[in-house]
Length: 275
Image (cartoon, rainbow, N blue to C red; front, side, top):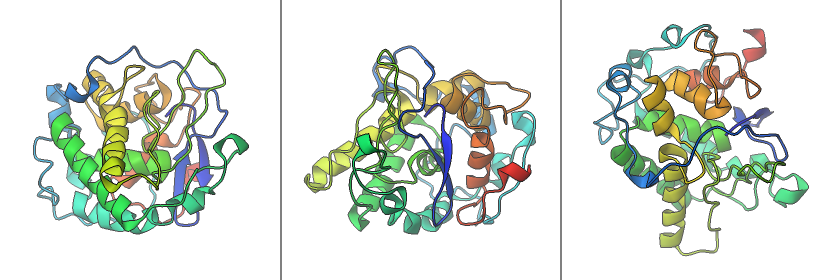
């Protein structure tokens, strides 16, 4: 999740970690990750925390707009929760992109620079991602839209995405759908459906609730109280609260990308270089 480079894909622009890019140490070990949840009162006010993730329409009726907008400054200058797309619409806009996500990343050997080690996503795998998002969102109290936006940002939703390899052997690699700190890699297309579901769910637990080697979204949300500073925390490990477009050595566009995903961006050109 750290030190991303931007990779344009056929269906949209996604920022993913590239093998061999230096990662920064970001956090201490998380104890009992699957029990971690949002506790910050500020997070529930800002929308980062959500106790009603079972409502896939989120009470907004907002179908979003597939455009890329520029935002600047601190988190208050980014779209408030009242402007976020409803989860059901966000899911329906992105699931077709997931079906070609692995091929768009190029399937091959991770050690040779490929972006994915297997084909995907199948219809069953896409459904399993939905199941995992809803399960992890309800247990962690992280807004389900933010989890989905992070999945698309980190891996394009490709279950077989390669890990971002850290050249520093003292630091963990970043595998899985959310490119977590030292979490699990997908079990593979040949595994049973139940094993694939378990693996996908664990990848989301790793990215959302943290791992024994580092923080997930929950820890960043509890520290900062909103998804935008949390996104910078997750990507960079440190946050310039007055300028969230400062990647702190990671991806400058990361927070802008997340903001646009939260309001409906999928296929429109990514134009951060014009911001």
